[in-house]
Length: 149
Image (cartoon, rainbow, N blue to C red; front, side):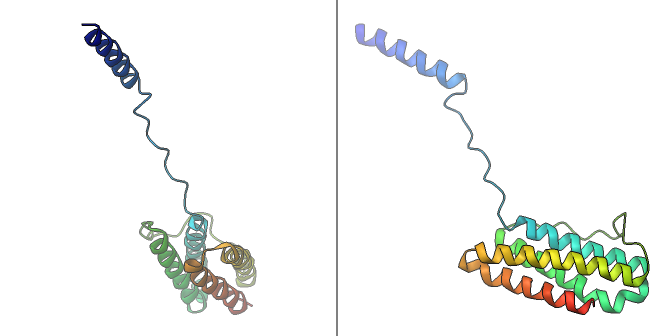
């Protein structure tokens, strides 16, 4: 009888602890992948190029391949980290570039340079299985800077 009483007391204590949620903790979600900012940056650059082409269609021949390259970079990075990309929006983002073609190209060149520096930093810190991908993106962005001159 004593054993039964102890079992009931301990069983009741366990049930009350489990009932209050102390034993039902969910693990916190994992932190975002370190390459997520590169995905976001590539998508943002692709949008900026699209906005620049919408503002000045004469730039389309020069900027379309670069915009497509940024979208391809985002696709490859997202695949590497298991992230689903949003569909491209049919309209240009608000607040597109303003000014003459030279000013627009200078702004894009500055954004490409920042993006190249960011990709190079990530490349130096990336594990070997991602370094080649990020390094090729850094190289492509350096090429984009030259195309925009």
